[in-house]
Length: 180
Length: 263
Image (cartoon, rainbow over all chains, first blue to last red; front, side, top):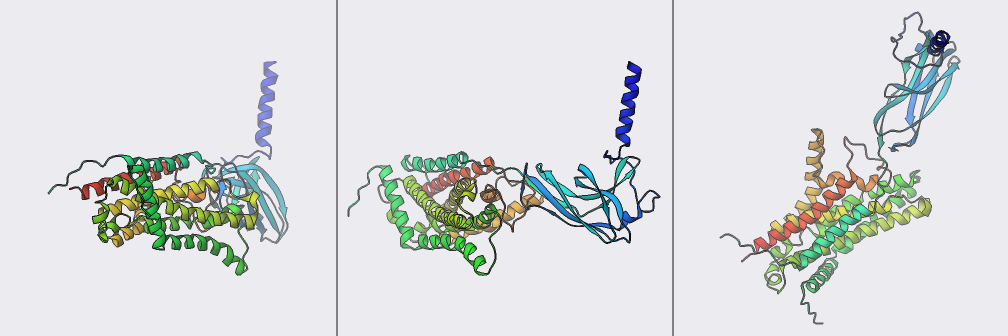
């Protein structure tokens, strides 16, 4: 039983690695001029990348919008994905964009605290791996911590200040002598 | 009418009333309250008169206006506390004031609380107008959840500004110099020192103006003309620093006043 199970696991693993849906970014970069580089991809551009709001809080669902344009004289097949800090987020979306056509891009991401670079990226599949080839404009977004709705802490501060003033009003003056 | 105040607490209450009446008589309170009404009203009326729409979010609209409360708080602190102690020396009224059978600590405390109440009155009117505008523009259900926290923070920031103003007022003998020192420290000197610290990648946790943004960020938005900074001011730390500035400022000014007029 051990032999066939091992073979099945190896086969399944191979299948997962070779399936076009798998996202791996460790491969060598694919550049224009490479025989496997689809010519039309070089004519794709991603413009007008914008985030849904200017003030983003932790846990907020951020929508990123963009626009993909094909400036080539033939249709282009590739995939696009959303990228946060150099990592692909979600499943790549395949597209077939006719010559001169445009495609609206939209992706959502649940924000985590800190500063992040977000943007869209065009991917092509080579040997079962998605290779990023064209990047859109990066947006640097700051994700703020959720606002503190806390009435008690500032109220305590105010009470402390008023109490200090009231106490000062009734305590005797310190005995200080001015040097002459 | 003859008013008799025998205990320090009675003298304190009488002192606060007297100081508030003085602010009213000098029309400073009137001007500050007028500013507190006009500034938020302008943000609501002028864009509409020019055909612009209100911001999409009630939080952003509130943050845009509340951002200016900081300027008003600083002005109020300079107005009401800047010359509270130095004015007595400047106008030689201390010659009668300090001869009265009351403790100097009581005098300082009553002046401090009067300045505090006047500043808080201005803040309350400002927030009241902003709340009315929010209800008119977005409905009562869309008021920012952090509005109460923002108001309390603004009051505490006001207290810290008054504390600093009292320190300047206690060691100077000119009411103009102490008022200007208060105004420029809060508006220029401390913010510039904070920026220098930030440029050196150091968080200026000591600077009371560094935490100003908390007043707007608790609303769930930053003013649309503001930008993110290198560090984010921490809420609890801000409350502690402001409380310390207010209390230490009060105690220090009392010590300086008692020391300067010790016989």
